[in-house]
Structure formats: structure tokens, C-alpha cells
Length: 169
Image (cartoon, rainbow, N blue to C red; front, side, top):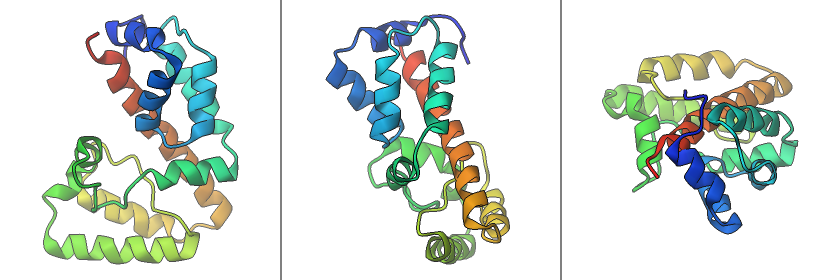
């Protein structure tokens, strides 16, 4: 990821507050996360933005974390018409019907246990890797799982912010 100012970062820094808020909401559904990032603008480098994102993710309250997770569709069921969701879950796109059915069952079991969607940074992972991760994580306790979710959310936020700041102005 770029550590110098990019045309996309310059564009982001120059956006009106409401437009910048809307772009951040596309990256993460947590209002608290977006407000922290907005308050620290302008960013001298993309790395500064990523560091601010990491700090904002670490500071999310349980309610804020729930809000962020609510913006993510279940693995194997990307939001219709959402290219970001489809791109990130590409590893499930070519999965067998059997694997998709198994993932649906695992998603439901996970959601039943933890009360929220199974969140994983799916970028670059195969359907089998995501299935194995949910199988492993379903055995976690609630507090341990919330911290894993926070870590995964941080990874997703960084990837999405990188796309934002690497866009041409």
C-alpha cells in the first residue's frame, strides 16, 4: 500500500464533509469509525489514514462493532448489485453447490451462537479456507470471537481504504 500522498488521497482530503462521510460509510458501516477518520483529515499519506483507521477500529465500542458488522453480508451471499461485496467474496463464487450449502449452514450456526454475521477478510481466500475458518472459530468464546472480528474488520477497512485512496482523482 502506498505511503505517500496519492491523487485519490488528495481528492478524499478535499471532499466536503458529507461526501467524505458517504465514502467512508462505503468502507465501514460504523458511524463512530467514520467520524474519527473525518476528524483527523487531512491526511499527509495513505499510511497515516490506515493508522487512523486501525486506531478507530480498536476504539469501537461493542455497539459500534455491531453497527460495523451489520454492513457486511454473510459469506457466500454478497449483497446483490454490490461490486465490493462480490469482489471480496470472489472465493465463494466458484464454490460447489455442496460447499455453498455447507457455508450457509455454518453461517446460520455461527450467527445463532454469536448473534452476528461471521466476519472474515475474505479477499484472496478460497471458499474452503473460509469454511475452515468458520468451523474453527465457531468453537471460540464470545469475547475471543469479538476480538477476532475486530481484527478482521480492521483488515477489511484497510483494503477498502486503499481502494479509495488509490483511485485516480
